[in-house]
Length: 347
Image (cartoon, rainbow, N blue to C red; front, top):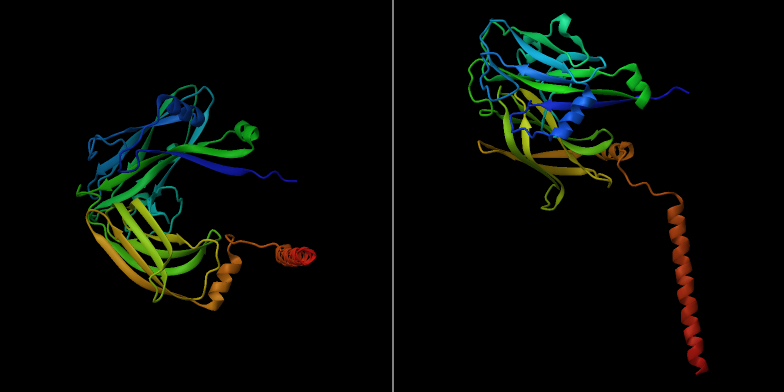
């Protein structure tokens, strides 16, 4: 029988968000370093927009190339091989910025994404460090000749390749690493002001086997939307009763991305009919509101209810057992009534 090997991905997001970063205590930090076998340190160049940030936030000029540096330091004697790659930022179904999708379907509004502007030279795509040594790698940035507004958002990912001995010990293919934010700008304007949410579509669908209402939205501007609150309420048409609801706070939308915000529909069967979906999203800068209708046919409802993994399955013996118990209860009640009448007659 073939051994099944699972892959476990563990990433430390190294100052890649724009919100304040919470640092682990010294013991936790040491544990993370020992687990991964290496640490990383950004070497910020002179065109860093905000030197207080530890991720790269660079002001670049059209067509002007530059190289940036990043230090990788071994934290143990054993060799550790590190793979270096770049990802574009996307927005997840939970309305958070995601740097972990290797080959995302990019939004049509995104021109010249980070992965087209930054290259990892061949000699730095895979680096081995051991015995507490430090190595400096370089990445090459080449902005397009035409100017761009706002920001380009992505991340550098440094993934430790598990050794054969580690895989044998755990039976798991464990990949650990760091994700470092990469922000490029030419105008150095405020990065989180000017984003725009647009409604695209609403549908009822299966997501990872679960029934959901999917609200598809788009930010077609080269600016982040952060500190966002969003509420989605689903009602039957003509009714004030809220059947399904989802609230989110402190949400973040990446620039030039689209996503589908998902509202779970629970374990009960979905009924065919027309539904009203009310969406309200707001932050300190702006409020967006939509009320849209979605129809579910009998065929679509049946398919959703049959194919979902989130459902209550009643064993076939339960109805029979229920009937038997009900009959037994009725017989018991009749016996008790007859006994009570018999006792009364004797008196």
